[in-house]
Structure formats: structure tokens, C-alpha cells
Image (cartoon, rainbow, N blue to C red; front, side, top):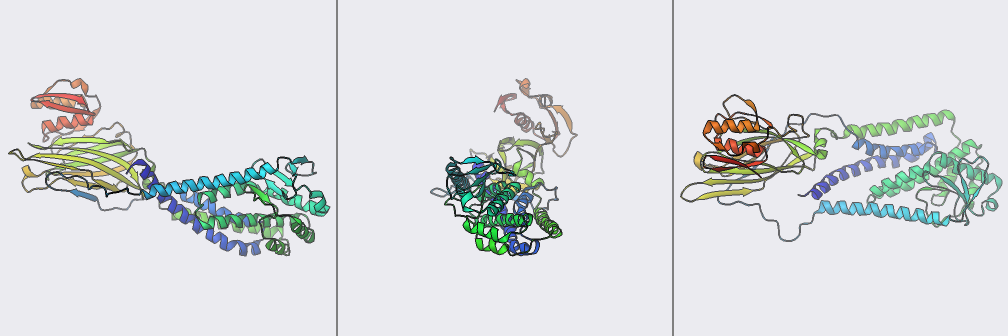
Length: 522
């Protein structure tokens, strides 16, 4: 699985979870918006829609670390005689559906954003001939369009402008003009254009979800009703003039994605029926904001509490650039005789090799990458060679892959087991990955520990010289090894194996010629 497929798999996991949370947050808002409007008034209605983005934010917010459940080790066993290779891929092209789904989603997002931009730009082009007009008490610049079907509207998210139709002063009475300007200024004061921009972005992210588009239309309607309620409260509830102004407003042929058209795409029946409701008192408006704020906060905290430790050790594995891999290795059915703690960069292979007795050698490469469901994937590329004498050599190759949780053990039992030690060709790898590297593992210092002997800390070069002197080897280029410290016990480790291991740890390859040893780059 390449990096693009891993990214697509992680995206699919997040996308499914966020889509589910978006649905759970949107459904209660749609169900409660009308009853709550009747109870607390229309002016505070749009506040309820904050539940949707806050719930999504709560799903992505960091969590405190939580204990990890103990899981049984994941074991991959590979055994056989002769040469073993990975199963061939099925004939034909295997459809990478995670990648295709991510590409389709991304294309959909870009298409929606492009459509929003085109429609907004088309609307603004029609305002090219608009002229600024001086309106006493206006809180934003006021422009009068050259067409009668453009406006009244508030245009823009940041640089907000109030747009009036060309026949504004002839179509509406002076009282209606005051109410319309007041309505648009309430939109500007509440920054409804900015909220619509954010809502359009959220709808673009969930473009495939039918509720996203229905919710967007409902938000627009709730914003209009809230502005209507605010104007009636501030101007003494002139309901007849307000209703007449609604009926006189023409429908624009273009929608306004980032902005607020006065009544172009909103059912007038609900707005007119709302005019019959009594104006809420100050106490009722205050209680409305308290109730809606508490509802939004409780819903967001519920989503946050329901998340399974998004930034715990599991979540850290998804974003980690480095991993610490603890490896215990046993060969031929013996007790583990090699113990590593190695810092690995994501996707960078780590090589190990060794032998155990006459005729048996092995080599392995391990690569760590994040996987779906907060797991770490360990991909191995393993080779063993067993000389059984009489010119018969048993070779085993394989590429096992295991996935495990952070801090959980995964094991690979590789090779063919036999009751006779000299005919046993197995290597057992016990692997425990964790994200990140601490100070002790960041320099890739291993710990080698057979069953007996006292551990000694020495520089890599000195350790090789001690081993060579003890067993009669001649080091041709000991200076090729670094001075990185290593802690090891070697009383029961074969000298060839120990020197190979030290060279591999230092990124070198030990080449033996009789009793002479040379360290070459890999």
C-alpha cells in the first residue's frame, strides 16, 4: 500500500466519521428550529445553527490520552519448504476505491466552490454600473444598481455593501424604504454574509449529502426571519408597510451565495405569518439566547465526549513522522537473544540481519507507516537461508504485513519449524511500535541482550574491537564504524553474528574473508 492509498484510507475513516457527526448535528437543528422559533422568537433562531460547525470542531479537537485496551498479539506465520513468495496479485487492474472516493470528493468540493465563485462573480458584474448613494444613518456603503431586479440586498462577507434596485425610490413608499434599509443594515450588523460564506464552504465539503443543501436553504430563511423580527422590534412593528414592501420586491434571476437578497429565494408566506407574532420582550430575548446557547454548548460537548480519544496515543500514530520500534528476535526456537529499540522515520526501511549456528542466516527489512483505524502498519521483507548439507539449500522469502495498535505487540513467525535444531529455520520477531522517538531512541541506539553476561556500554567501534580480539578476528577498517554508544551482552552470541549485528546497526555491512573483517557501506 503506497502513501497515496494510506492517505486515502485515513481520509475515508475521517470522512465517514465527520459525515455521521454532521448528520447527527443537522437533524436536531432542522427538527427544533420551528418549535424553538415559536417559543423564543425568530431573532435568536440562527444561533441554533452554530451546533453544526461546533460539533464538527469538537470531533476534531484534541482529547486527553486514554488507557489502551490490552489486545492479543497479532501473529503472522509464514512457513514452507523451498522458496516462498507473496501471493500474486489478481489479474487485471485492482480498483483503489479509497483513492477514487477521495478524488471524487475533492473534485466535488472544487466544483461546488467554482460554481459559488462563478455565480457571485456574475452577480457582481451586473453591479458594474452601480453608483454610490448617500443615505443618512447607513452603517455600510449603499449602492444603487442600474437594474430593477438587483436588490435590495447585502453583498459580500467582509467588504459589505448594501445594494438597492434602480427604481428603489419610486417603487417603495418612504416608510417602506426606511424598513428595507433597516432590514439590510441588520444583515450587515449581524455579519450574515460572512456566516453564509462559511455555510457555503461547509456545504461544499459535504456536497454529496442532501441535508447539507436543505440545511443551507433553511439557514438563509432563518436569517431573513431573524432580521424581520429585529426590524419590527426596533421600528415599532409597522407590519402592514413591511408586508407591502415584501410583495413589491421582484425576484432576482441570480441567487446571491455570499450575501443576503431581501426576499428573492425565501417563502413569503412564512415571513408574512411571522409578522403576526407579538414582538418578544427583552427578558424573553435574553432567555432565548441562554436556552439556545446552552443547547448548542451541550450538543458540542456531547460530541466531544463521545469521541474515542482523538488525540490519544492512537491518534498520534496517524500523524507521527517518526516511530519507536521495540524488537525482540528469537531464532530456531531458542529464547529471544536480540533486543532492539529503534527510532524509525515514517516509511523509511530498517534493516536487520544475522545468523544462528552453521549454515543458517537471515535478513529482514521493516517499514512503519500509519494505517486506518488508528493502527500502525509494519511491513516486512524477510529472507532466510538454511544450508542442510549435501548441496541442498532451503531458501524462504516473504513480505508479511501486520497491523497493530499503539503500544500493542505484533509478532511474525517466519520460516519452517523442525524438531531438530540444526534443521529448524525459523525466526520470530516480536514487534511493539509507538509514535515518536524519545531522547534515548532518537540516535538509533539498540540494546542486544542474550541470556547471560553483564551489560556493558561502549562506543560502536570499541565494541567491535572487543569482539574481534576475543574471538581472533582482524578488523581491516575499524574506523569505518561510528562512536555511537551501544549497550550489549555477547557472552553467548556467536562472534560472526555479533559483528554483523553491530555493522548493521551502524548502517554498514560486515564482509568476512576468513578471519578478516571489513565494514563496507550498504
